[in-house]
Image (cartoon, rainbow, N blue to C red):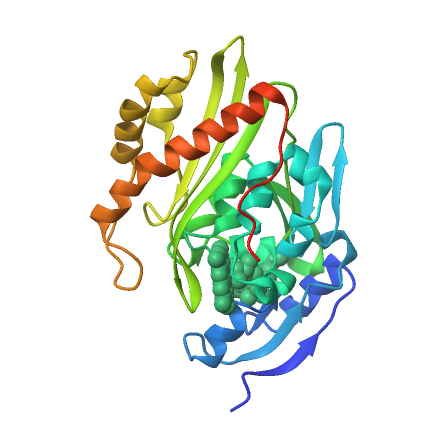
Length: 306
Ligand SMILES: Cc1cc2nc3c(=O)[nH]c(=O)nc-3n(C[C@H](O)[C@H](O)[C@H](O)COP(=O)(O)OP(=O)(O)OC[C@H]3O[C@@H](n4cnc5c(N)ncnc54)[C@H](O)[C@@H]3O)c2cc1C
């Protein structure tokens, strides 16, 4: 059985959207194909009339910085992110999370946009984008082919496990933007996984901190899977604001993260109880590393996959 009938390789966002619109919901965007092609092959998604490959759209494959804001194209691969000195220095958690996705073959073709659009709460790159308070630029084809663009918070793109809020027949993610780390700011990503032929993430956590004079001015803690969508641990973030990060506050912070989390047991990965045990461990590791980076300005990504 053929899984798709036509394959399009547009060179611009407008061209990609007009190819999508031509099939009236029977076409799919494809980037690395590491999620989509398996779904088609395994029958979790019905065959489609066409695939619209966005990896030749040059504005979707760039990493750039303008006035302190960093832009990462949706079709940028995990390997490209890991190799970026700009992202290592200014968005360290994103490099660390993309650096542990699958193995080298998956990272060479899998993209950040695909990680977000696939809408799993455990998407590693996604969790770091949430901690960075990233926004996604969505291109939308309207009536008579007019294309409009708008920025939406990354978190608003998730409706449930595997359910994206994107209208797949007429919308695509062009790129992401977030503020690069400045003075007194740092981030880190830590993950536990079950190496079982393929890496099955059990829990990932990204932390972004702004510190001054030994006190945490602002904290962002993102984690998953800890609910139907990637999430922010807002109670712990609020508690940590305006206090120093010392060992004594860690148990209380972990309790607050657990209050926000909705942990579940998954047959192939871990029980909810085990995940609850991991939260204090990941939190301490990610917080201390992000704090050190924020305080010293030194940011060398750790734990990148082989
Ligand atoms: C062996 C293996 C190991 C893996 N390990 C991990 C892991 O450790 N951590 C992890 O997070 N993920 C993992 N994944 C999942 C996957 O590799 C990532 O989610 C990857 O980032 C998906 O990107 P892609 O470009 O391949 O997406 P694709 O498969 O091309 O697309 C995925 C979905 O997103 C849509 N889409 C893609 N790009 C866009 C866009 N720009 N706009 C709108 N919609 C779009 C597609 O239509 C499709 O529905 C693994 C996959 C495999 C096969």
